[in-house]
Image (cartoon, rainbow, N blue to C red; front, side):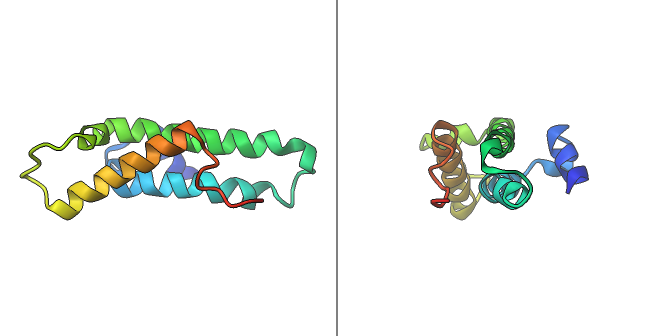
Length: 109
C-alpha cells in the first residue's frame, strides 16, 4: 500500500483515473481510524486527522490533474458516455464537499 501511495504522490500516469480519487476519499475516512485506533491513546488524535487531511489533499490534487472541476459546468463531453461524465461530476462534488468539511462522510466515532 505504501508503494501505491508513493505512485499516487508522484502522480505516475497509471494513477490518472477517477477511481483513484474515489479510493483516496474512502481511505481518508477509513484508513486513519483503522491505523490508529488501537495504537495510540485518545490524546494523539491529531495523527489521525493529519493522515486524513493528507489523503484528502491528494484527492483534490488528482481531481484537478484529471480536470474534474470542468465537469461542474454543463458542457459538451461528446467524447465520453453520459455515465462517465456523471461519475466524474459526482466525484468532483464529493471531493469539493470533503475538502471543505472532511468529516462530512465520516461516521460518528
